Amino acid sequence: MTQAEKLRELLAQDRCHIMPCCFDALSAKLIEQEGYDLTFMSGFAASASRIGAPDLGLMSYGEVVDQARNITEAVSMPLIGDGDTGYGNAMNVRRTVTGFARAGCAAVMIEDQLAPKRCGHTPGKAVVGRDEAFDRIRAAVDAREELRAAGGDILILARTDARHEHGLGEAIARAGRFAELGADILFVEAPRTEAEMREVCSALPGPKMANIVEGGDTPDLPNAVLHDIGFSIAAYPLSLMAAAMQAMVTTLRGMRSDDRPGRMDFVELRRRIGFDAYYETSEHYDTSKRGGDPA
Image (cartoon, rainbow, N blue to C red; front, side, top):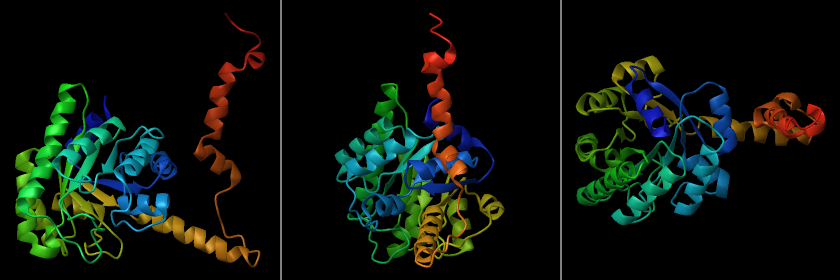
């Protein structure tokens, strides 16, 4: 089963999947080890961890695809990659979708922001006109179909940020057209109330994703409520990065006074990174420990 097929099966379930978002291979491994079914490579978090810079379009296509490939090689669960605006015109969108598929992603997100894009819950966002937005999704869907014809596969997560500039009605209209063009998952960014979230889900077909940024514009509702509203995925893009940064800052400040706050012990740290599994597998190739070569 391909990663795209795994994701389709998850989306067919009558539930809202909690999706902690990763930013590198290690954070993705921890998500999988804790039993979650899927993850998303947060552009905000990946930009912060890889280049130490804000998510303002500074990471290149090549850097993002490389980060995604590192993650897919470390885990077996489906990864949704953040393809931003597609890194150019419709032809660039096609290349982006193909590149993310070859990197092992189950889905790629393409959005309608004006480049350089911004985090969906920060000021200064602007979106391209309808025609360009629709051309991006049309190009993404065309690339998906060419991949399928050649034996590959990927899903298209179509995102609109039109709520910020043009209101919820425009955002819903754009997302509806994305669905008509063939997008697999719809994402209306930053609805501001539970009523708006319900309007999004009642107006649009197919699987929908909610994006829950702690302290952001969208209400942080319980998973049962998100499922009742109609969401299939609840993404938490910054929860792990915020927790990791707070833990590192606390540790760094405490070290000045010889304070060692509670942290993961060395045995568990090695196990989660993969040392134990590595040594167990490597013994298969140690002839002296096996008592001679069976051949």
